[in-house]
Length: 139
Image (tube, rainbow, N blue to C red; front, side, top):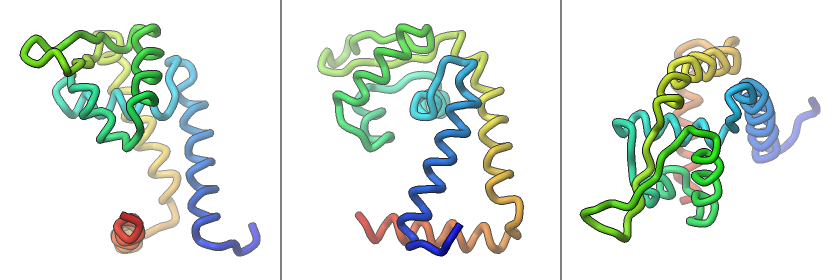
């Protein structure tokens, strides 16, 4: 690849990661965005509010509604109103989603190892620091 600007390279890396992840996740009937929902819910003990999901994914309410609806139709999530605050919708992992979670996590780790294969631990730490600085510059 010819030398391009940094933003262009970051976009292309992201596109390739998404294509590879979507191909890996296809047999689970999941997309990369949906796998991030499962990972987030797993880290939250299996459930969270829809608003917490919006904040974590940094997407709009309608986007989360669409993602959750498709995942519920595919048997990955259950949704119900929060009895303590009816303004909140609770999103929960199903048993089906819990079963595939560990295997998905292993695939994600394998893809990250592939992405960083030619980097030393020091390089990875520096890269992470630089990427975080770039991200914070845009906040």
